[in-house]
Image (tube, rainbow, N blue to C red; front, side):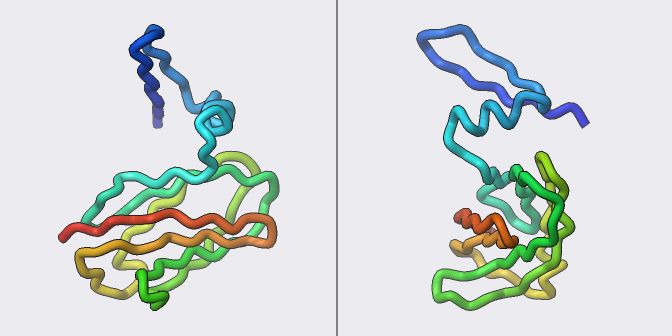
Length: 117
């Protein structure tokens, strides 16, 4: 997979970052948890950096704090890319705003997810 992140600044030339430089870019833009596509219909991908190999729990939560499901994730040291098809949660998500929570012994990250049916 050839993943490229493009950053454009009207005062500078466009910059293209290959996946090897994504950790540096994430630090630069202040993000350690990226989720796309967002908004989405039936699946999203989360991307994050972990400093250890560990087991995590990814939960999908609505704004009333109802947990729509959780899945176990084997997390590796470095950048992780995890696909979250909503049918893995065995729930039919309505249009709305949700929170994806990633929790391990060293990480606790939350990101807003918009579902559009």
